[in-house]
Image (tube, rainbow, N blue to C red; front, side):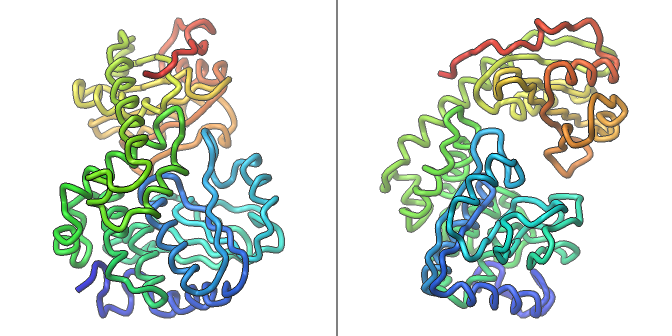
Length: 371
C-alpha cells in the first residue's frame, strides 16, 4: 500500500472534506493558479505535489515563496502576490490567521497540518482542509499527497510525501505504511535530501526557490543524494554555511541569570534555533535563549528552548515587552518558542525575565558575513 492510503473514511480527514477540496482543484482547470507553500521541507514537498496535480488538471499554476523574514501574512509579500493575475489561490502549511481575505476576490484553498498552530482563524470564505483532531495528525505534504492522488499517478510521487513526513515528524512517525514507503524511497537518500533542503531556508541566501526547483527536477530522493539534478551543489553550499555558522555562534560566551542562559550573537543565517538546540542539550536544566541580532535589519530574532518542563510561552508573555502581534511563537511545543522584536523591546523582554544589565550596544547588528 502507498503511504497514507487507507480505507478509513475519517483519516487523514473525512471523505467529504477531501471531496470538497478536490472539487476546488477541479475548478482550477484552465485557470491561472497561485500556489504558496511554507518554505520548510514539508511545505516545499506539498508545493511540488500541488503543482504536479494542477498541471495534470490543465491549470496554469505558479509557485511563490516568502522571502527572508516574511510569511504568508507579511504585507510586503501579500503585495507581491497581488501583482500576479491569479484566479485561484492555494496555500500550503502556512498557518491560520483571521482577518480579511489573502487576495481580495480570489477563491482560496488552505491545506495545513492542523496541530501546528493554535489559532482557529482562517481567511473568510476560504475552503480549509486541515488534519486537526484526526489521529495520527498527518503533516501537510502527506495530506496534499492523499488529496491530489486522483489527479496524478501517485506511485512516482510518493517519495515527496515521504520526504515531507520525515522532515516534519521523523522516521518513526505513526503514519500508515511509512516504513515501507521509506524503504522504497531509500532511507539514506531521504535523510540526506531533508538535510540539504532544510539548510536552504536557514542560509543567508534563503535559497528556497532553488530548493523547490531541485524537487521539481528530481524524480526521487536518490537523484538529490547523487547530485543527478541541477542545483544540488548549491544546496550543499547552503548546508556548509549553516554548519559553520552554528559552530561559530555556539561558541558565544553565555550570560547566566538563575536558571536562564543567554547567548547573543550576530549572523545573517537563521541559526538561532540550532544554537538553542545545542545549548539545551548541554544544559538540560536551564532555559536557553539564543538571540541573533544579525538575521534581520532592525530586529532581534530569538529562540527559547528548554528540556525541563517549563511553559516557555507563558514565560515570554510574563515579560510583556510589546504588543502580542510583535512576539510570535514559532513552535507549538511548550518547550520551544521564539519570536522577532525590535532591539529595545527585546531588552525589555529580557528584563521581564530577570536578565538585566544589557544595553543597546549588546543588540547591535554586527554585520557578520556567513562563510
